[in-house]
Length: 274
Image (cartoon, rainbow, N blue to C red; front, side, top):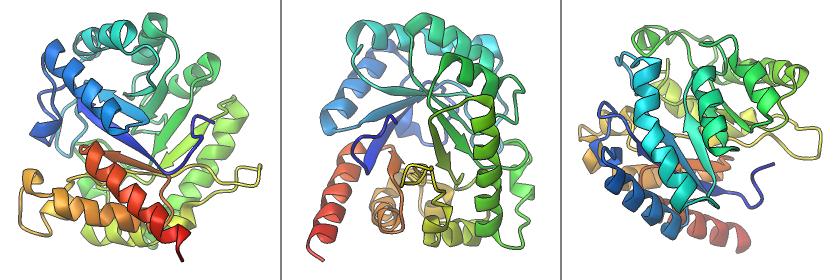
């Protein structure tokens, strides 16, 4: 498994000008290299790059546009940061294929858990890549109208149990699960899931559980609740990161690596001195 010491931090770099938080966007090659180096120096174990915005209400760019935005970043990783671990945020198996041919191994981070591309899971299995599966309903355009659950925690947990069974049958060996905060969940459902992350710990058959990724950084579940902007949401995000760790998160997917690493240090100190 890619995770050796948990919890860890995954830093976010968006190559699309349409991502919801302006501070995560790196449009030029120079910006990308500088941000990537900074996140590594601050302690990011994984850096997540994406070139197709999937924020609520967004319309995906074409495959060619996604690839043209990705290609300069992949070149930088190959030439400047070849020893680093990165994940590629895409729901297209064709992008995974092209990126693999370009740079070799990476982690696939798919918001659709293979539902938006019928070839994705087979592609990941064949290339023997680690895979992050996220729970959502619908598309970025429709998902906020699909927040219908009898028990959001139980339904998300059942979704992942079924997904893991299918992924194992297909041959995917390394799976990380992402509850999909903000994706087809309203504010109350997001906080219910946050409070019950431990219920998503699915036995991996080796005495542990499949790692849980918490992606809550600066999201609307924070800034809308507090009537602030994403740019003003760092302190509140940090507070929720600590709660996510307490409740069982293994990976924090964040815009602010330094602050997330500090939270992990505090969390580990709290646990050690109980």
